[in-house]
Amino acid sequence: MDAGKLFRLDGRVALITGASSGLGERFAETAAANGAAVVLVARRKERLEALKAKIEKAGGRALVAPADVTDRKAMVAAFDAAEKAFGTVDLLVANAGIARVTKIVDMTESGWREVLDTNLDAVLFWSREAAKRMIAARKPGAIITISSIAGFTVAYGLSSYHVAKAAVVQVTKALALEVARKGIRVNTIAPGYIVTEINRDYLGSKDGQALQGSIPLGRFGAPSDLDGAFLLLASDAGRLMTGSTIIVDGGLMLMVGG
Ligand SMILES: NC(=O)c1ccc[n+]([C@@H]2O[C@H](COP(=O)([O-])OP(=O)(O)OC[C@H]3O[C@@H](n4cnc5c(N)ncnc54)[C@H](OP(=O)(O)O)[C@@H]3O)[C@@H](O)[C@H]2O)c1
Image (tube, rainbow, N blue to C red; front, side, top):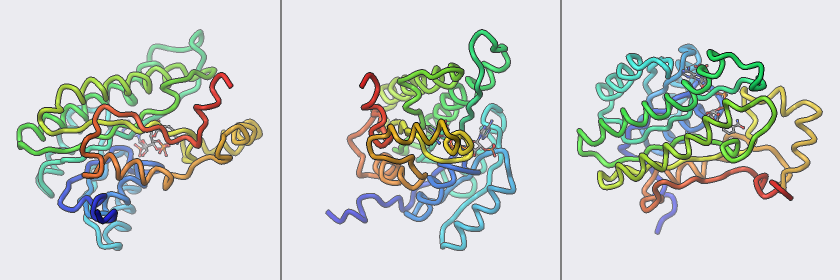
């Protein structure tokens, strides 16, 4: 088997939420570089336009579909625009996410909802929309959610993030079970610490540097460190995988309790 061919995404239509920075930007570039037409979703339109130009310059195909992932009307419009431009989305990457630091005793209901709406509800509803459209079009496909090792641990002040990421693992498994017979695979990537805008300040701080020292492989990740897991789950290489969680964390989870 030619490894290059096994991981290709030619003819696929990929929609990536949170494509304006960090992991989502990288997933979009990787999908496009491997043959998929990509639909770029986030709120910061100018960033998406810049990424589209970069992808097209490299020979890829991209569409900008600005949307707030918590807005269901904008969600439907993004899928409609994708379908019009490229055909039914058969690869969804539900990646958009935020983190807010507040202890539970100080938390407001709106603060809780903001994180759960973005990191959990949107993952469920965008995944559901993608699955419904694939089923209607009788098209097999893949859905990749982005959870986190934070779905398996807790840290001070990040309860909403931890709860949402734990639930994303369960949403992934539940949906995987329900749509498997339709040829749709649903899997999640649980990254450890990957340096992006969500954490750059903290990871660069003294505490962050101490944390880096406790990672068995000795470093934080870069978005490109997820290329392998992403292509495995997106492509035919992962054809018998569904409901799986791939942890990509430099071995940090091995340190829990040890
Ligand atoms: N970096 C890590 O170490 C790490 C580890 C584990 C999991 N993750 C997860 O990976 C995902 C990507 O994070 P990242 O590290 O790439 O962070 P990032 O650079 O801050 O990117 C977050 C992305 O989500 C988008 N987003 C946030 N709220 C949105 C909303 N309401 N509507 C639409 N888009 C929204 C942002 O775009 P706009 O602001 O333009 O809308 C941005 O593109 C998140 O789910 C995060 O929890 C990250």
